[in-house]
Structure formats: structure tokens, C-alpha cells
Length: 385
Image (cartoon, rainbow, N blue to C red):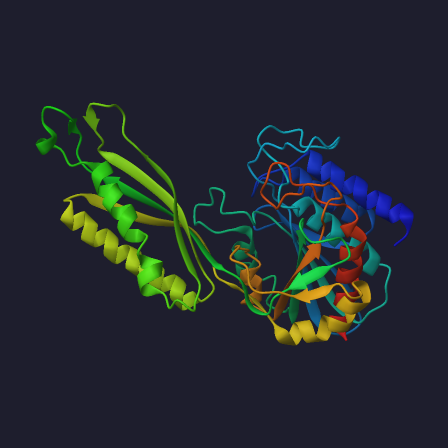
């Protein structure tokens, strides 16, 4: 890549990083992308899945493939101290989506100057980090797939930076590579009362919630095959108003993970059964809401085999197959629509202490950008053959 283009991409990345936007609110980011596409005469459509942008380059006859990057930031206060740190309180690109967007834009500009036969769709996707108030509890990836953008696509490809993997390296897992992911809210409704004088007239929502939490934590250990993977974590419990008042409402929040979709649904089924049983035992009303669901991300061995030579070319001696992770990714919806691969790109900072994604001090090494652009470009050309 020419030094002038790399400098341009780094400036774009820093502009996006300095001005992060939460899911479904990526207005400035989308405009920046559209302005760059217009400048280069590239066809695109905006407003897909609310704030998404899809660009297309087509030459001659051939298959259609898709390259995807996510654009949204996280509700985290940045603590990196970088000169281009977030200018917005409480919002930060702590998962590297600014770099993903930049690399996809770089690959697009490179491919726009390259001869090939076929069509490439460049998907700049909103709201990967959750549903962000979507009335139907759908993330950007789910909405985008449902829009029909992938209907004619033969293969899809995505990259994600990995801030604990050295620059110049790449890792991947085949099959179920990332977990089925669910976020839930449970509302326990009891009856308020005097905690000292008349507790017998109340229905203690805290007592009910305590029983519920204990029982929910038995689901994985006593229902999931110990050779399989499952997680249910209670992460928030909120309720009560005063020391002498029995609480009439408690909300419980948490997450579910499983690599196998059947095990994920089994956890949900057992949650509902336990909730019904505790509600009866404690004479309370308990409601369960699934606030987010991503299926497991499936990486295709067929696609990886086609790209293996490209990976070795771009990352000589730096490509490693690893086990699955229990992180969630809405590229999973792409992977269940068309054969796909999702790779992790080394982006470790040179500082002595480095942090993983979703941390307020995480730093993404911009040295990964040329590697990401090169891989996306050459992988696209290989998939079109």
C-alpha cells in the first residue's frame, strides 16, 4: 500500500475514533464513508438497517461476495490518553470498530483500482454491540441480513482486531467459532410491606429473587453435558427502597452463552421452568425478557481452505487455528445465511501492559491496518475466482 493512502486511512481512523457513535446513531461515521465513496465515484446505498452503508463494485461476470465491517462504539469512558482519544463523554471505540471500518474502506479503495470479474459488496454495518433500543430487539447484523443484502452473495468475510495478538499475525477457529449469546432481564414482582411490624402481609421480592438466583445457577452444572460449553451469569440485581420496607420489585440481569444452539435453547427452557416454579413457591409474579440474541458464528472450512494461501501470503508463519471463544458477534447472522469466515487480526500495542477489547484503556495498534487491508483485498479476489 502506498504511504499516502496509509496516511489517509490513519487520519480517517483517528477521525472516527475521536468521534465515536453508539449503535444505530452512526450518522457522522456513515456520512464520512458516503463522502469518501462519492469522492471516488463508487456506487452505494445508505440508510440500510437504519444507519448502514452498502457499496458495490462490479466488473464483468462472476460471483458476488461480501466484506463486512461494523461501525458502532461502546458506552465506555476512554482512559487511553491518546491525542486522538474520544471527544465524547462516556462513548469510546473500545472494540476496534473504527479500525474495522477503516480497513474495509481501504480495501474498497484498493479494489476499485483492481481488475476482477464479479461483484463485491462492502457492508458498513451499524449496531453490532447490541440492539441499542431497537423496538424489535434486533442488532444491525440481523437487520442487515433481513434486508436482503446477502441474498445474492456466495461468500462473506469479516475481520476483528485482537489487541492481545501481535501485529502481523492472524487467528481463526472453524465450525462454531463464537458463542450463541443472550442477554436477559428478569422482573420479580411481590408486595411491599412493613419489614418489622408486618412482614407477613408482604410478598418479599428480594427473598424470591435470592431463591431464583441460586436455582438459575444450577442450570449449566446439572443440565449441560460437562464435555460441552454453557454459561449463565447473573450480573445485576436491583431492588429495595429502604431498610424498613420490604421490596415489592427486583430486576435481575445477566447473560447466557453456549456454542451449541440446542444447549442455548435448553438453558432458556430450564430458566422458564425454574421461574415458573419459584413464582409458585413464593406466590410472586416473575417475568423473563430476552433482550438480545445472537446465534453462534459458524466459520466455514470450505471458505477457509480457499483463503489459506492468501492468509499465508499476508501473514507468513503467523496464521494460527485456535479454539472457539464465548464472545458474541452478530456476524453470526451472516454466517448462517451464506458460507463465511471471521478472522482475528493481530493488533497488540507496543506498551508493556496491554488490554483486551471493551476496556477503557485498550489501544489498537494502527500497524495492523495495512495487514487488514491487504488480506481483505486479496481474499476478495481469491473468492471471486
